[in-house]
Length: 64
Image 1 (cartoon, rainbow, N blue to C red):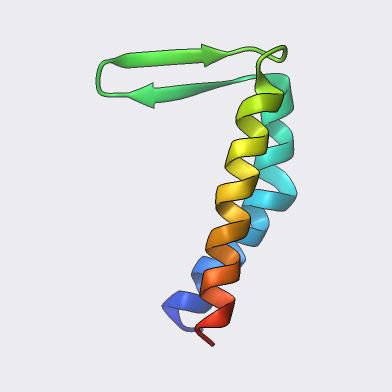
Image 2: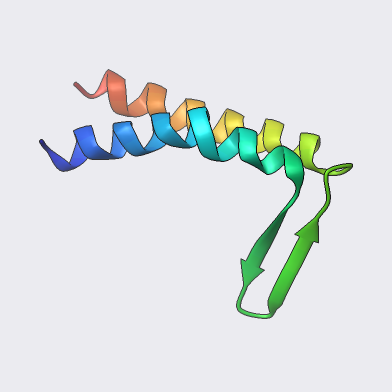
C-alpha cells in the first residue's frame, strides 16, 4: 500500500469514526494549553473539520 493510499484510508476513517465522535465534545491541544469544545459548540467545528477533510480527500483522489 502506498503512502497516499494509507492517507486516503486515514481520512476516510476520520470521517466515519473520529469526526462523528466529536459530537460528544473534545479538546484542541496547543502548545499553550487545551481548548475545551463542549457538545453545544461542537457542530460548528465539526462542519469545518468535515469540509477540510472532504477537500483533502478530493485532492488526493484527483491525483490518482
